[in-house]
Image (cartoon, rainbow, N blue to C red):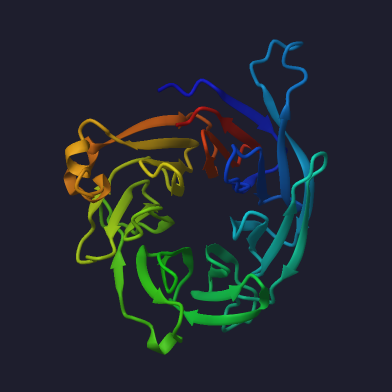
Length: 358
């Protein structure tokens, strides 16, 4: 497969996160971006419109993104996820969480911040705000991880009331992911992954921990976590060294698979939600790769319900990898896939749209 239809659109903002607006029955034409490391940071709502200059400029770009609305943020945007098709949760480097409502319209789409939490993360000794580093959603619950080593769980209906605060770790948490309604996993600066129970207090938390794999003895922190959309016991960890470690949550005595991948840290890892045979990774070296289950070699292995990701050393022969984007020269921080289209952004102050991805 060749990804010839890649269009670049400069937006004059470094992008920390990008997400398509959820659509059930059609290809999404709208996405949101969050910026970082700018004098003023914004969450922006974009809509793809037909390129009226395509013929005049002999361009093959049929659609171009137009900013429909924006909301100024207090600090860098660190994570964003849709709770439902109209509600967006956004975490910030000032330790707060914001909830936005997106209104789709025929002409002008709108977005407004409906609520903002109190300070969810702060350093105990100094009482200074600690950056919120990541968030994960399950139903109406939102869990945030912070550099203070804590996890805060709130409901989207009232983000000012903390349902549960768990002192999960003694050092900064970099990533968090719901694996079931009650269970979360967090990853810290040293590559230690912990399983938490969102229903119980810190003292009653299970003592389940495991380490991300690495090629040598150097620290290898987990930079991104992703669970399989259909088989929730499969957890993938993207790491600082650019490798992927796969865990079967039913057996944590050793990793199920380990893959050398990028030569730079993986900033985001995630499956195509409608086609889980496709996995995507975005790296600090300016790359986006697509990992596809090999339908021919993997057919005998997968027909009885096994996943190629749990095949140990055989995973390389059961999964094909293709470069979607390369040689960007600056970090790709985030991507999202909806239908046959991928959008990604990073430190080049541009968003990249890739059509016919699957």
